[in-house]
Length: 112
Length: 115
Image (cartoon, rainbow over the protein chains, first blue to last red):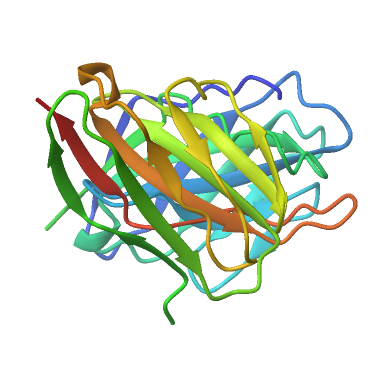
């Protein structure tokens, strides 16, 4: 799996958009970008994933640059419950038996 | 929506005792996984299964055993508990077929202390 780089921490005001960046400059053509988050003392929660097109679901939007070397997770209206560690993971599809490699992630703190 | 359910949520064991961590999922996922997470660290894969009757080792399998007799259940057994196995254990499942890109869905974990 390609290595990812994320800022260690970010702050966001409640109600504002949270934009979490991730660099994955060594990504291969068949590797997907996944985002998970882990709220303190809970299990990791899947957020969104994509290959090369931008993706949106009920939780967030994923913007992947044209060269696929970086991406941004957008939480459009952050709430206090979005305070968590956010992990960007790059992974080859079909690797069913391979583990998810959670790096250091970004600690997002949403402030009132 | 139940998703992935783990029991118990907390447990304290004495050194040398054995126990089984239960995991069940109701999403009809064929793949299931067991991870452990030590304080301040990332997840490490213990065992995984690609379907009923099939299991395989992850990166840290020593001291653990698993079985997969049904699609829904994937119990993790500790035979001789050791202090090094104090950790939070997460079970996960996913749907996979061929070049599947489907994400893994996690339970809320079992917090295990070995004293």
